[in-house]
Image (cartoon, rainbow, N blue to C red; front, side):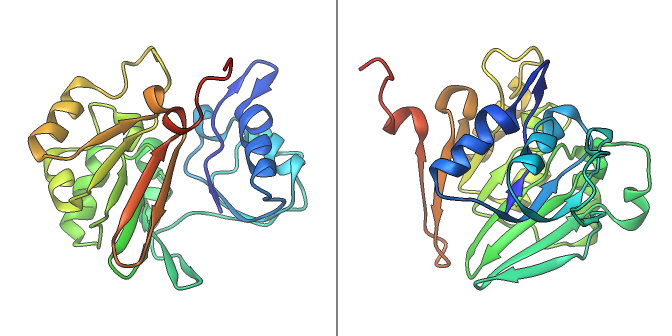
Length: 233
């Protein structure tokens, strides 16, 4: 399964230049499911190249105009309650609700996925921000997770204090670009994480992050730039 496909940059996109080469290097030649959290270019920009480059059984979530020419891949809208299991791991969509899925605020319609087994869980919120975080907290949805990807790349409007407290992660990950113009992850979010005692990894500094998570809740992570060395050596 792949969650989001990165951005498009003129003639290039992350699907063609990053994701497909990485999957091939890892021996992955097909996907059972592609999840597109919401229809923002920095999340769906690589989707067309990816779908053209390897077989994908189905797509869950957004279906941007850039995929209009893709005719042979089944597509489902992402709505809370959708769940499936693979090798004992549970994949549960916890947001958006049916009403929110039909709304106009795209970030808060993000397909929020919790993957869990035993005592282990990881939470993938797309660009979900504070209003949807509070809605999930009010609804009493199971959100506690060992690893949390920060909503909206660590934007100030996401990762509220109560959200971080209730999720209670051992690690937070900011998926952000080096010197990005938005300043993600925001200083306010970094301060909230420090106050909550939650360590953070930022992909702008670490490169790709590989997490080895066991059902016992034990998790180990490695940052690409720590294990790969320098390419000119």
